[in-house]
Structure formats: structure tokens, C-alpha cells
Amino acid sequence: MKTDVEIRNDILAELKWQPAIDETEIGVIVEDGIVTLSGVVNEYRKKALANKAAKSVAGVKAVAEDIEVKYGDDFKKTDKEIAKAAVNALEWNASVPKEKVMVFVEDGYIYLTGKVAWDYQRKAAKRTIQNLLGVKGVINNIELVPNTKAENTEEQIIKALRRSANLEDKGIRIQVDGSTVQLKGRVHSIKEKEEAEKAAYKAPGVRKVDNEIVVQLHPEFV
Image (tube, rainbow, N blue to C red; front, side, top):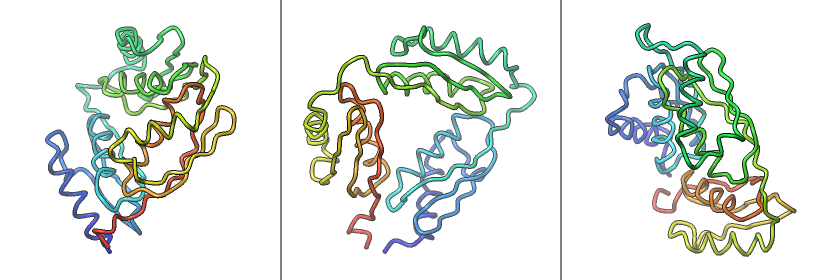
């Protein structure tokens, strides 16, 4: 079985492979496949990339991210400046219904609230603002309120999973209760788990996805 030391070494190698990240700034601890990232970086983008890099490594079951973002004096922005930049960025993104999203900034952290019809709109809002200068983090509290009724949800999600080359044979179990979908089963990576959740959110009328899929090490690493 792939050991915690091997997983840690793979994560450090993946961080080193990322040109935007200085791997010496990131601390990595692995216990039973659960990764904790720590350290201090000067951009929120680096924090997000480190998290993504760790999730891409085989054997990782979950990632706890405790990286702090600290900007130098030359790059600090006031909350007012960050809020203005965030509003402007959202207005230019056609994927985000800007009239339904509210922005609040406190100590460099952006809090998003509001209601949108699709999960991709909620995710697009966060992606649009997370790399703005001065941003330390984004708390996405946007609610998902579908404007269509959930119909044949399980069947539609099954078809979506089958269309995915990474998920067609995983045997993911789906349970639907109104606008809530519960996912269960086993996959070999966090990426596959997230892809299954993304597929579920694409079904019309889905408001919430409880992703209880377990990440299990691939047989080739056992």
C-alpha cells in the first residue's frame, strides 16, 4: 500500500512542478492519506493551486488546507478597493447573474451571498474574484435555488456519469429526495469524487448534493 511518506513526497514533487508555487513555502503533513497543507504565501492564487495540486495526487483521501495569505505592503488593498474590484469583475463575467450576487469584504476576505439557479454560476462567481489583488480568501455563501422542477433526476445523473470516461464504471449509487441528491460509492481520487458531484449538480432542479463517496486507493498502489 502507498505509505504516507510516499504520498507526501508525491505532493511535494507536484508542488515543485507548478511554476507559480514555491514549494518551500508549503508545509505538507500526511496521516492515513489525509493531507494538511500549511505555510504562508503572498497570493490567494498560490493557495488555491497548492490545494488543487494536493488533490491531484493518487492516494490522497482528503485535504485540510491551512495556508495563510499575506500581501506585502506594496500590494495591500483596502476592503473598499477589493469590494470595488470584485463587483467590477463579476459584472464582466457573463456566467454570473450579477444582480443576484452580493459582495461583502472584511479584512481582505470576500463573502458572497445571494441566490442563483445553477451550481456553475455559484462556482463561476468565486473563480472570478479569488485571484484579485489583496484577496485573502473567498467564503461562498451563495444559495442554489433552481428555477426548474426536478424530474427524472436519478436517470439524468446516471447518464451524465456514463458519459464521463473517469466515472462510467465506478458503480456510484444515487438517491434522490426532492431537490437533494445523495451520492455514495467508491472512487480512486478526490478529482473523481468532485466530478461526480459536478455531474449531479448539472441535473435540472438539483439544489443540494450530499457527496458521501469514499476515496479508495487504486489497486495498482496496493
